[in-house]
Length: 202
Ligand code: S3P
Image (cartoon, helix red, strand yellow):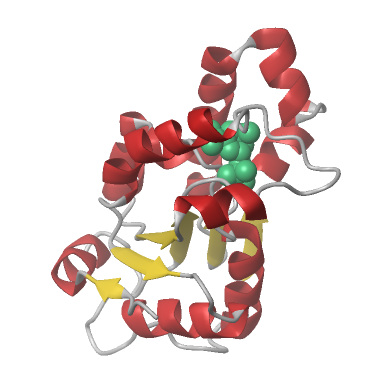
């Protein structure tokens, strides 16, 4: 099993911008985003992470669907990927603007690859956690009945897109390998890597 990698220097730099104090003069993380390719487990891990922390959980794709009143599939089909990315960017910005509660936010597989979104997250002091696994495993995991992923085409396209995006995902503050691990273990690794306090909601 591969251990998670933490880049704490980057995290503490980012956390200077969060504007939340723990009473000891140190700033605290108030929002965490989970990033990674389709099938990485961002939603499942995010829900468990939020439960443990007693934070709110949001899934960016769900926010997009609720705001637009349609499905991701329909947005891709009727308006195309470029339009989808514009919507994604706008809804991410509004989710980050809502800092009234501590939250774990699972991003769709392409959101963190967008440089504008990375800049937005960086300036908001929000650390990104990259959930990774071998691409074959991601391909198998992302084949879920009832879930349509417009960019999950054939295996070759899936692998090529993963390879293309991986260097961007690797810019996240923390990288956690998920292969063969229980959801609870992955959530615990994220908490440890970001030095979050379980049960400290508001
Ligand atoms: C996408 C991944 C999907 C969804 C959309 C685009 C991508 O989210 O946002 O279909 O570009 O990889 P998941 O990663 O949750 O499947």
